[in-house]
Image 1 (cartoon, one colour):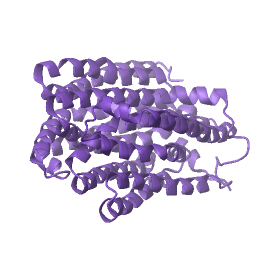
Image 2 (spheres, helix red, strand yellow):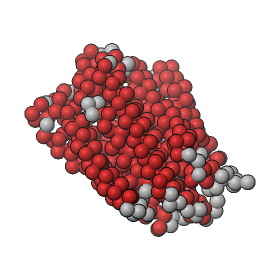
Image 3 (tube, one colour):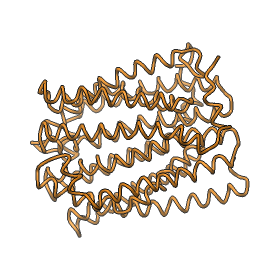
Image 4 (tube, one colour):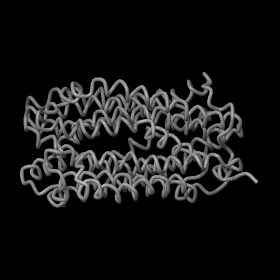
Length: 450
């Protein structure tokens, strides 16, 4: 008998469903974020502070890679949930096959183009003669395994949206556990340095991808690998990319922003200032990833019930997600504001790097209690097939607000102007999210949800 997990999305209590779907996703995202943190710790203590700066230089390329991965993964996963809500299982299977094909195409293209121009791009991003070797060695290995990374994240999103949140959680946790075993072995025991850290990432994702493919080979699942599903279908590709465009633009804009930050920090503070941004990024990403996990739990519930025309359930999951996201981000704000020195000291013993990081942490976390609301609202618009609103929200925070601030404020306040740009953009983006959501809720009350 086929797995009936997706059907529960339209019948079980919303609170129970959100816990069932969000908790595994939160655990998985927290584990992934903790891996990124421990990865930086291994590099910081095992290779040195300049290696941390080199790692930070790679963030724009990593963000751009993530942009293409989310374009396919999140778009396909949301579309899949909607089609399952409509009981359209034939299209759901085609979405699985198209997800695989699109990820292979995009993964290969991104790797080839980036490898051809890697060093000039890294120099443009802010690499120096001292940090380039670290950034280069890390990215070469990551790019060689890029197709694996795309497939891993794409299939995990599909796994979650097809009613298997715990398996999606286990897939992420397995990659983290394998990473934590291989990373210190490669970095310290074998002496591979930053290349060892990158190798651990690719190997762990490859092993778990094999497990994902095995799962989707089971014909007892609602959706599974079969002949005829891999040929790209214009309707599926168009709808999936339309839904995934918001997170794609958000990550693509993040690439531009990290370049501006890196160039500004290089000019005003040198290589260690960039290393401080790497630390701030890792810490903030921990709490952001937890909310992303919450959003991943909310997304299939909202999308399925949207497809099933159960409006009240859609609104209820939105309210619960906003409440929990606000609590999570407030906790991050309190921890960082009270213990910034202790947090920065986890990554390095270099006093200059710690001092840069403490300043950055205090500024960047300034409006974190409000950020969760903005993140949930953006995902909510994606889930109910309102990509234009989600795209505008992403562009408002990254392009309309943050980029101009990064160009203007450093000329008045130096490095502090760079740090201050981020919380100001967060605050303005929250206002935009509130306006857009209020308009949408008014249309809900008028019965215009569908």
